[in-house]
Image 1 (cartoon, rainbow, N blue to C red):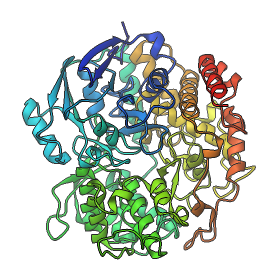
Image 2: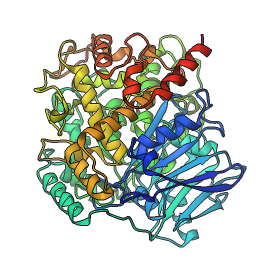
Image 3: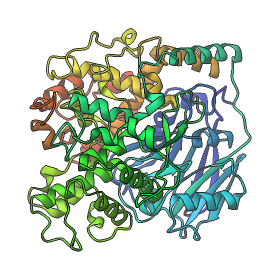
Image 4: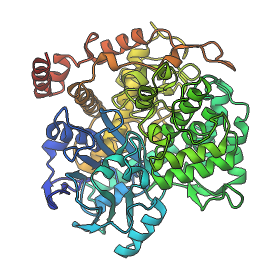
Length: 639
């Protein structure tokens, strides 16, 4: 029997056999990993072969919650979608907010593991520990909005949360997303394509269950303290303007990705930023379950050619990827693009990078042999962007090539197309510019287990660009930070170890990492999370235990990739980031010593500098000797 915070149950659904099983979760099993993606990687390591085809019925997908999901902890509205990525072939986790994670727990389960493949389109209806596999043929081929309403009406439960795919996932676009609550998105890495390959349209959850708290009085005191700290949150304007506030900040610093990462400033940045969005299109702020921050946007274009219904978003990443990256300064078209991506179920980062890649290839004469249906691909063409989003979703024309991601698209196009393909390990680069924001971001892109990633497990620039302790100094984080533009001998490698572990603590607890940024009394630190978990679970949790659990999870994700065939040779950054950036304060900056930064990081984290494999003593210290043995067996077999 589990203590507070956990339901103590794993739900398994085999879509091939239609078998449904419930397994009990024990403290001995979960505590070394805490939960969410930490325990999900343990499950997938144990149950997947290293060479499993990501789009085969043998791949599995895990909906994972952490112990704070569904509680009063203000960052507990998250769940993680975990799987081997169809886009990269590597480990992938995609976090989404909203209310799906809490409602999965109220339905009675900490984890949902889906395997196999249905012969026909289906969706799952999980409610009060009951599970139904229901026919989805009437909504196969339909978008997120229509399908959400259909399912809500069919199950007669408006208070449900539904995570589902649109046409992008059904057509197995390799960066198709999973969308819950009509606009909260587990976006990156192709989880939607994996669901589509299984003929799984959606998972609907609801329940009247409750979660136990081991020490209610202590828990409420810790929650009150967390809210007090967040009342001093340092990112001014995040409530008022949301993440679109970053458009202006990044542009002023010369770090706003523009024209496929050629420039660091966009002349029309003010036209697509948070201030204008708030003034002209904002209906109201929105928050995830239990969050007082409310960084989400609810927006609309009321009339004209880019008219939309009220919708969630857009976030900074969308405005930059489909805006400045493509030199599109039309805000209303960006809201329309955001709506289309949400309804088709697409990752807006990968879509924007794919379109910018296509425009630059066209500009350099590389697409003459491809059927473009008479289109001229040019920067700033808002209507072209909207057309390509639809073509990508439907696997239509040139959109079919772009739907495979820029790494595969570059291979198909040939010549020097790879020069314009901004990706790491196949994952398209997000809208954080290492040459203008912080060189530590280049290190994060290179070594991150899911490829180019700005958020999982953390925003690395929080250390030197943000200069926030986040409670990590007590655990050994180097301080004070060095110049953000320095590379070697600047403690970047050691700092990234601590920044990554700080973010990984949020990942395994199941928290939104936004809440962990700031000075020690301005955010939820590892020390405060330890206090919260102790009161919630009844365990005696320390910040050091959380740090070691984060290390265990992080190393498991690296080992997952090593077994899948990735090595140190895959820890790269795109050629473009090694060239000088243009415009603004960062003009002329480039990443020159990525291999040196990686060496420093591997020394700090305890991984072999030649192979990238975690060292034997590192894994043994974390209680992962069996993982080391599997890696060595794989190495012998692959010789």
